[in-house]
Image (cartoon, rainbow, N blue to C red):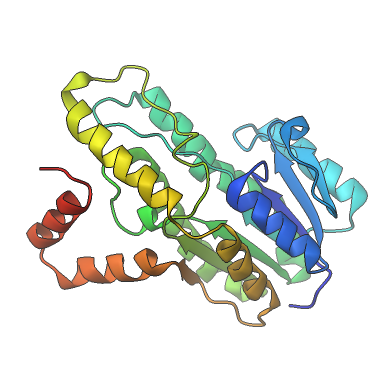
Length: 270
């Protein structure tokens, strides 16, 4: 893909989204970043920030109108907005589970529906959905709803990739392992938490936080996406980090019991 494309990125207030915005703007792309509260976003040179709540149809429509008022078209959509709900499956209410999916899954789906008709009509465009190692395997422990939302986005994206290939629209999945962001610091917890799970949940969360603190910088994700945008034939699956590569392979190699013992050992779940 040639340089100078117009790129719309959801969730640029911090972490991966902000790093992507900085990298692509520096590479010469016209970048439109979005956030629920644009006034809280640090100014990024070359990046226009628009308000967007991916959970709300009217907000998506308003964001698209504003973006297209300033630009003739959107060449690339990067769905990055998301958060993690950490808690045992039993602890999470149905409403909390729906909220997790509204952002992580349906939010991406709303954005795809907003940009795809124009991309399909002109037979050009690129959609990048950011999932997670948690979307490839059901881990870390107590990330069940987050993992489920990312598993759903994985399946959705692969079907989308197949369907829109007839119209020359490119689709990519970016699947990071642990990245040094504020994901666990900004976690949400079930309102009706239970002490029953606390001993194991707290141990697993501590391991997740330590792993995140020692993980690669978000720039590795930004660099991956920059390569995808410059490739004439971008790959569908793009795993980032050694964990995202070897953990799914390990799961295929080991029996269910063996792999579960590895997970319990890593996360101190005796």
